[in-house]
Structures are given as C-alpha cells and as structure tokens.
Length: 469
Image (cartoon, rainbow, N blue to C red; front, top):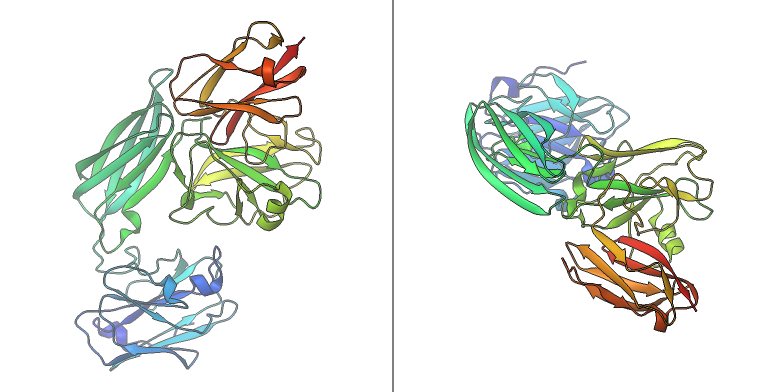
C-alpha cells in the first residue's frame, strides 16, 4: 500500500522523512527509537511539525543543518556537525502500521510505516515513495539509499596471514575504495602479543595493499577522512592467528549448583587492552561494553544473565562481572562462540563427557575448574605471560633453601601458600629479571604440601612443593 504522491518529491528543497526506527533490539525502545528528516539548506520555514497517526509528535523552529533526528531523550542525540535534534515522547508502534506526516511551510511529506522488523530501520530509497527495512543509521546520510551524498569508503578488505617463521606472522591486507577514486588512508595496528604499535598514512587510488609483520594476532584500524556517510570510513578488526585468539573463552559453567546462575569467563591473553564495544557472544545479545570499555591485558571477566546473584555467590569484589543476554546453556551438550564485530574469534563446545554437573570446565585445559576471575593455565590456545622455574619440588627442613626464578615482560607477584592455601609470604619480581629469589618455605611453610603461586593480571600459575623433615 502506498500513500498519495508527496509534494516533497517534486520539490527537492523540501524536508523529507528518510528513516524511522521503531524496534531496536540491543537497547530498550526508549533509548533506541528515532525518526530522521533530511533537510536542505536552500529551504526555510518558520516551524517544522511532525505528526504520528494524526497527532502532533513535535513542533520545533525550522532547524539549521542537513539532518533532524527525533529521539526520546536528549542524552541520545547524535553529536555531529550539521545534525539537529529534538525530543518526542510518543513510543513508536512496532506491531501495527503507523502514519507519519511532516509539515513545514508549503511542504508536506508522509509515510506509512508497516509493522516493524526487530532491529531494522525503515529507510527511504532516493526521493521516491519506496522504503525498505535495513540497518539503522541515526544522524548519518545513507549513501546506499539517498542521492547526492559525498561518500568515500572502504568497500572490500581482505586479509591473508602468512607464517614467515615460528615467531613472526606476516599479514597481507588488500583493500578497495568505494564511492571515490582516490584518498588518503590512515592505518594503525597493534601487535597484541608483543604489545607494540605502529601507524602509517597511505595515498591510495582505487585498490591498495600493505603488509604487517607481528608476533601474533593484530588489532587493525583503517580510517578514511570523514564525509557525509562516515559509517564505511573505518574498519576496526582483529587479525587473528588461527588457534591463537587474543580473547578466549577460558571457563564455562553451564550447569552450576543452584542458586548460582550460569556464567562464562572470557580472558584477554594478549599484552594490550581490547575494546569491549566490538566484543559479544555470537548470537547472544549485544556488546560486552560501551565505547570506552576495554578488557585489560591478562584480565578475566565473567558473563552472566544475573550479575547481582553471581556477585553474591562469588563473594569477593575484585572480579569483573558483565550482565549479558546469555540465555540458557544446555546441560548435556552445547556450544558458545565469541565474536569481535562480525568475526568469530573463539569457540567452545561441550557434551556429557566434558564436565560432570555441577562442575564447570576450562576450554583451555579441557579439565574441570571453578576459579571465577582467575586463569590457572594457558593451554594450547594462549601464550603464558611468564615462566616459573623452581630449584626443587621437594625441600627438607634443614636442607638447601628453595629458590624460584620468574621470567616475563611485566611485574609478577610471587606468593608462598601453606597446605590450606593461605598466603604466608609474597614478593614482586621485576620485568625481565633473570635472578633467582629465595622462598622461605622452611621458615614459614607447613610440613607436607605447600604451594608457590605466581600471578600477573588475572593469570596465575600454581606449583605444588613438599616440605619434608
């Protein structure tokens, strides 16, 4: 069904309704709903009025700029040059049709919005009366649908990893411009294993390519100059060495003892912070954090649908817990995948033989585990951040003192634990220190089994020792 032809179609200078978003999925409706109007600098009127189903939704002085975005709360106004914002209170229907009408001076425009599709915006195509559901672009011109939009973006980016040696990986990156013939491209990357970063600016025409040599996976950022459609101006992605993801699922509790809620642990095995705004459990809710949130090097976070109850059950405050739409995990067999943007970077499966309920398990080692917020072993998927060498695993009360050497790229805390796992001594080993240090197990330990624990971030290696008479 189409409405009567619009006067706005025959007068390009008139404001046009271009996008309606009635049913967001990753945020509450009141946070995500919006209506967008495209403006023209050559047109002027005293006021602009928008009506929904015949009732006035908002009436504002005719705005400056080239976009007007209606949101429910000014806190969600897009902060962009030439984009005006107004607040409206009516909720957008998402299970029935609705009619929006625009009035400004002699200009009128209208659209029949059908029952919505979850997570999709209703987007106008060109200056016709054809609309379709697509991804939402609040406050941005959509070059794929609107005419006369200045756009230069990255159309295709292909990455091929080539192992040049046992310690170096070479990534070859091929790209192609879309919407323009030439521009300058900023390229920045971080070697997630070495913790180093580099950048370059390239003058490119049509296709472009470059190479990155690293010790492991890479965080890559490709950026073009901002234009009217900036959503294709940046690529933020991980170049992952197969089997060596910087972020891994390090523990899964798919059938814990009541009242503990199900939870999943994610560990940053790299040497740099990774932004959480791009990380999610594939197919299970939204991102794990906002634009300023990161998971720090060697840090573990717990994901659960009931963060309050899990915090109560964990019992100590220094473990980071994130509430996500985890759903329910299958007790007898299932799978989880971790995504960065649209890319799967790690996955795990389990069945009846993986772990006996209510025990959890570590995908890194394949064994039962219940250490929320601590990663005990690196496993094949990750690289241990340091090595621990003991002079002996058996110490006599009047024999040679126990010594330990820890080698790594950062400070490591070394602790002596007695047979009840109580800390009785600790010391800090500086980065890149090759020296042996004495551990006073003969003076402070207990007869029988004791433990030496070395920790950096949330990664901890524990080694058992025996103190004999």
